[in-house]
Image 1 (cartoon, helix red, strand yellow):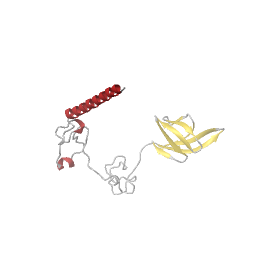
Image 2 (cartoon, one colour; image 1 turned 60 degrees about the vertical axis):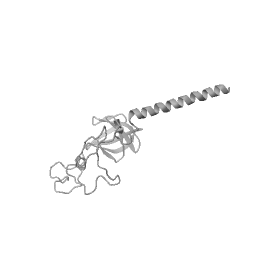
Image 3 (tube, helix red, strand yellow; image 1 turned 135 degrees about the horizontal axis):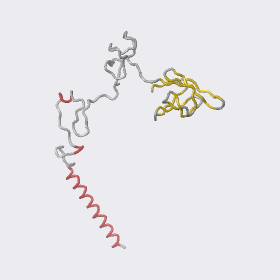
Image 4 (tube, helix red, strand yellow; image 1 turned 45 degrees about the vertical axis):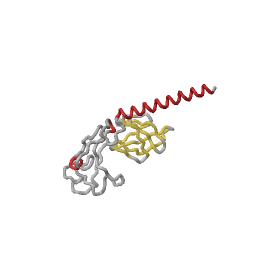
Length: 183
């Protein structure tokens, strides 16, 4: 029995040494053991140094592989502040070209005019043991039940006493009574 244990230990030792040699060979031939970054290749290769002028005007420049230059920023500083400019921001402004982003063109406004279709759940009521909902789409009112399609693109999935689940294409959304959403 001792011979069997000795043979087993020798086989395990040979396998461990073989795997160590194979691992070392892979590291050496792949260039991962380089300390100065000059013989690295692939995604671990060091990026070529860029001068400051390049970095300041390098919007969208690719340095190495899939890496892209971006300016570091404080993650705790908000992206949008009350002093942020409104001009040129997508989804803002009134489209009249005066640059102030208001609705009336006189400079009074919050700088944001949402666009889209307004879907509102006005009421849910019980009609003969079946829940029916009143839903408005851009001001047009629809009386719908579960399974009904309204405004050609919306479908009622389920209704409860306080809320409803609706489908818009393949996207589901939920509205409580009195809520509205832009779609």
